[in-house]
Image (cartoon, rainbow, N blue to C red; front, top):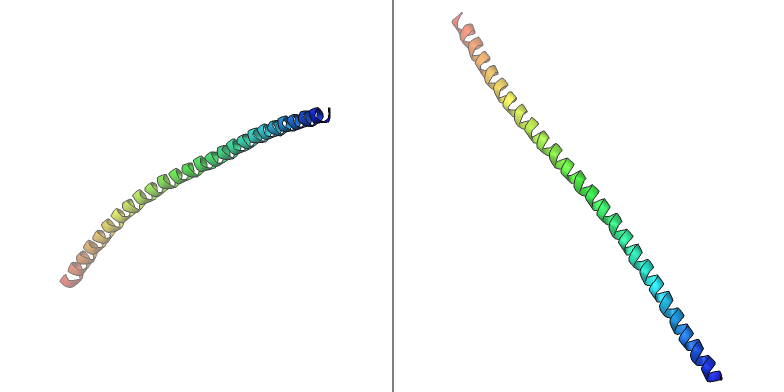
Length: 92
C-alpha cells in the first residue's frame, strides 16, 4: 500500500510539474511576442523619423542650391555695376 501511494504521488508530481512547465512556457512565448512587437513598433517609428529627416535634408539642399544661384547673380550684377561706375568715373 505504501508503494502505491508513493507511485501515485510521484506520478501526480510529474503531472503537476509538466503542467507548470507548459504554463510558464506559454507565458514566456507571450512575453517574447509582446517584446518583439514593441521593438518592431519602435523601429518603424525610427524609420519614419529617418525618412522625414531625409526629406527635410533634400529640401534644404534645394534651398541652398537656389540661394547659391542667386548669390552668383548678385555678384555678377555687382561687378557690372562697379565697371559702369569705374567707366563713368574715369570718363569725367
